[in-house]
Image (cartoon, rainbow, N blue to C red; front, side, top):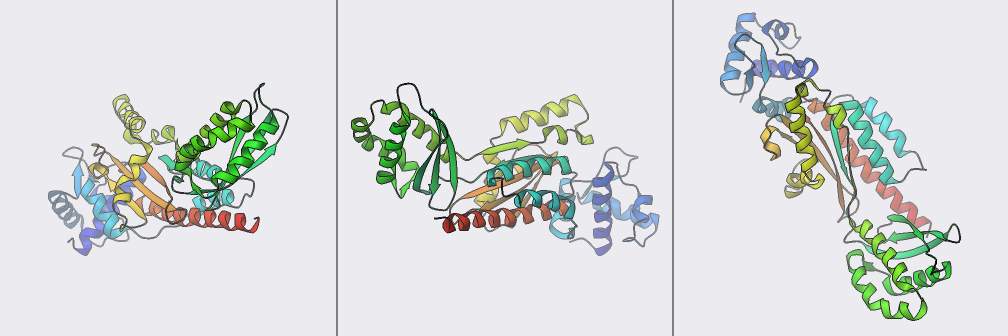
Length: 348
């Protein structure tokens, strides 16, 4: 355990380095309101912190920078609550826009986070594999096109555009929807393709070119089962001085492009007792890269379904501020989904 003075010095170095991306010298440390020590004492304490692995030097004559161990100690012991009103206000304007779906809100939230933090944001939508189909509604918009609305038992609604080919008619689609509503109510989404095989002979008797319509329904339900995801802001992250040479740029782009979006959340999903926000620094990420950091949060839509948001960037991050943002977002997204579910029940 560090002494109070050592903690103050480490805190000053982490926060100053986060702002400037420059090694921090004893004069800068001594100027902090947290420090009441001579330059010699500060240098001695810094030498101890370096020996214990909390600080590093880029070269012999430079000031100090935090190590992975130093960042971890800061995150676990020294962070304080920060004002995040600037980010909250921009994102909150999305949540109160009644014309936006929750998936659109999540996608734009990822873009805003990247713009305001200079980090890459990965957004994974909830997985609805375990949900049940409540009903299907048909909304014709022309002679050849219609919106088919899938309503799940948790209140989630998915809209899919269907196109009628020259061999079919809108009436064929209506017959199909009526049949599916009768036969598929309260069926688990993942079980529906199997149920389609049972329904196929009945559909064949009532709809002449049933295969085309059946294929569209299978494709639509497959897209519901597959969790959505989006990645934002690689260009913003590359503005950080850590990525100021071509080799490091190639390395980080290669890493982000090859990692599955769902891999960002594996550690948090495997440790459900951890905090709402998980912070992994350097090699803790499991990506074999000690120069990066990862902050993730997962949010529950109901008792079974989860999605997540991840922030990826260099180790030099405003961990305290980013922690506050992700913690607030997890609660806000859950609240938005619950509101959407309640409104769906009211409109029944």
